[in-house]
Image (cartoon, rainbow, N blue to C red; front, top):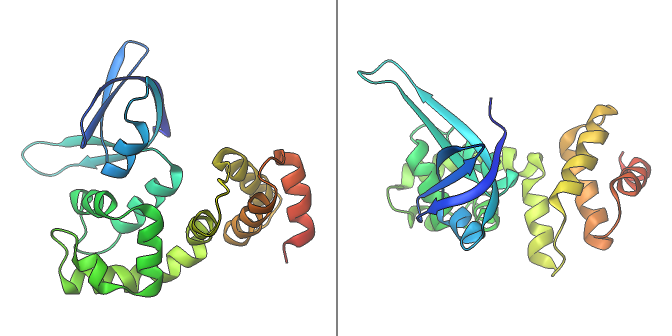
Length: 204
């Protein structure tokens, strides 16, 4: 299983990025959100979702690339909804930023989801019903809310490492992510070990 691909950005269009690493060029389907994040860069790192389709006349193996783990997690949540396929999920993430999508689902904004090409009322309602609790419990919504409410940018690498450490210590990922996000919002330059120490005092 491929977690991420890091290498030289050989080619890029609004829908596809080719990353060359170790002499191999990997073609990854991307959203406009990821396109905006990596456009103009020479070296990039994309988190990967692998899609293997079997049973038809031709089996297919497709890679999807995302600039952040959060966008990939949203994509994976979207494709669990009945009626939302791989391309529809990518269309949603191209039309609505990950932060906006979290707010749209959390607030039950059917109208905004319906504005996405290919999304009807029933599909919009199903996305909201199926994902609202998952979005809120996953910690993604909290992280994006932090980003929206202040000019502070959370270091996702530090956050991920801190949450991983807390999870290994036996704490649930969702409350850990919430506490870590709050700590990094207030003190964005803290090293991982200090974040974990503070979190241990705050997690209930």
